Image 1: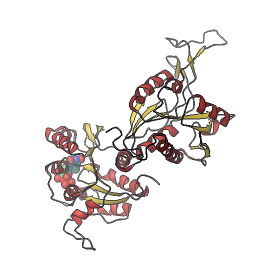
Image 2: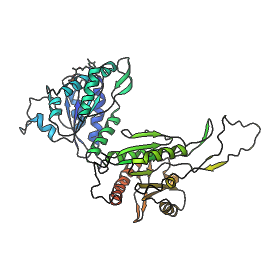
Image 3: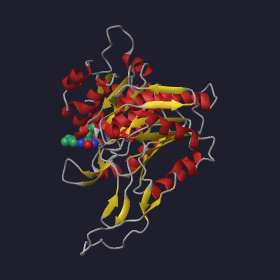
Image 4: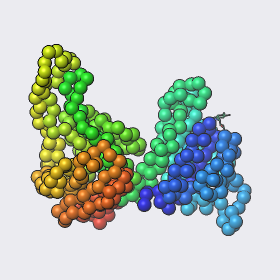
Length: 411
Ligand SMILES: Cc1cc2nc3c(=O)[nH]c(=O)nc-3n(C[C@H](O)[C@H](O)[C@H](O)COP(=O)(O)O)c2cc1C
C-alpha cells in the first residue's frame, strides 16, 4: 500500500502550454491507487481535451460550477470537503493571481477557497511572466497562507526562450505530492531522517579512483519511502547510477571522508540515521597530483590507509536511532550480528553482497535485539517499503512515545 492508496486528490489543470504533461501525472496517481478528480479551467480545455483526463482517471472531468451532481449535493463546496489534497498543475499566472485575490469565478478557484485540505501549486509560464513582481508577490502571498509551491525549472521553454518557468516533470510533482501527503498524515511526520546511499570513489590520481558496484537504488528507495511517511529527508549520496528521488535534500559526496563530514553535520538535529551507502574501508595513502604514467614499470603498488568508521565516530549520539547495512559475500549473519553489537545499532539490515549490490532486486534480513526477520526477494522499491514499515515500528518503541506521528517533533 502506498501513501497514495485511497487518497482523494483534486487535480486542477489551468491554461498553460504545459497542461499536456499533467496527463501523465493523472495516470500515475491513478495507477498508484489515488482517486483523482480533475478540474479544468476553460483555458485548459483549449490545450488538452477533457476526454484525455477522463480516460486516464476513469472519472468525469469537472469544469462547470453550475451543473449539480446527480446526488444534488452542492458541488462547488462539497468537492473541497472530501479531498485529501488540491494540486494545481500547471498553475498559470492568471490562476495564481485569482487565488491570491481570493476570486471565485470558476469551479477551480471556488473549490480552492472552500477546500479544507492542503494546496500544492506548480507554476508554469514564460520566464518574464514568472519573474514579474505581480506574480512573485502573488506566490509569496500564497506561501504565507500555507500553500506549498513547487519551483518551476530553469530551461528552454516551449517558445524559443531560456529561463525559469518550466513545469517540472510529472515524477517530480508526484514526489512533492507524496511528501505533502506524508507530512499531513504519515507516521514519520515531524521527524528528520538522514539516509546515505551509493558508493564512494577514493581517488588514486586526478583521473582514477577505487570504487565499488553500488548503484544507489536501495538507498534512494529508502529515502523516498521515508519521505512518503512524512519525514524531512537528507539524502547523502556517493556516486550512483540511478536518478535520485525528488522532494528530499540531496547532498552529493565522492569519498568516505566527505561522507563522514556530511553525515556528522546532517545528524545534528536528526532522529533517525539509515546508513545504506557502500563506503570504502580504505583509501590510497597518497593521491598523485598528476596522472600516473605506466613508464617501464611492470607493477604498481598503491598503499592504502583505513578510512574512519562513520558509525563508530557517532557512537556518542545515543538518542539517534541508527540502522546499518551489512552486505557480505560469506558468513553473512555472523558478521551482521557482530556489527549490530559492536556499533551499538538499533537494527542491521543484512544482504548477500554479490546478489544485491548493483542489482534491481534484493533480499533483506532484518536483525535486531529481538531476533531475525527475513523479507522475500523483492524489487528494491518494494523492499524499501517493507523495511521502512519495520523501522517505523521499532522507532515507536525506541522513542518510547505512543504518539509516533508527533507532528510537532521539530516544529
Ligand atoms: C499558446 C498559449 C500558451 C500559454 N501558456 C501559458 C503558460 O504556460 N502559463 C501561463 O501562465 N499562461 C499561459 N497562457 C495564457 C493563459 O492561457 C491565459 O492567461 C488564460 O487566461 C489562463 O486562464 P486560466 O488561468 O483560467 O487557465 C498561454 C496562452 C496561449 C495562447
